[in-house]
Length: 130
Figure (tube, rainbow, N blue to C red):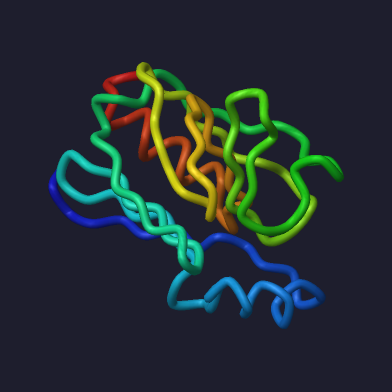
């Protein structure tokens, strides 16, 4: 299962001009599973995580607090999303770090993926979970 799978991060048309300031384009808004890593790109946010560090993956309803952009919720979550819709959320086994642009530590990463069910299934398959 070493083939690369790429999933687009959904960006609503209304947010495209605003998110362009953060470098978000169609080419730089994706979550890519390849080998034993997950690479998440959303404008200037470009991080790679070992799949072994993922404890769980699932979806939940979005809200104004998880709104569009690159931001932290100050409760251990970082979001890279382009609308207020459904959030695909990864929970990591260990604390992760990122600069968004200020340094943050987090254990949850939320994204608004265009094909959330396929992404969740692909991550679970790599984790050996049905």
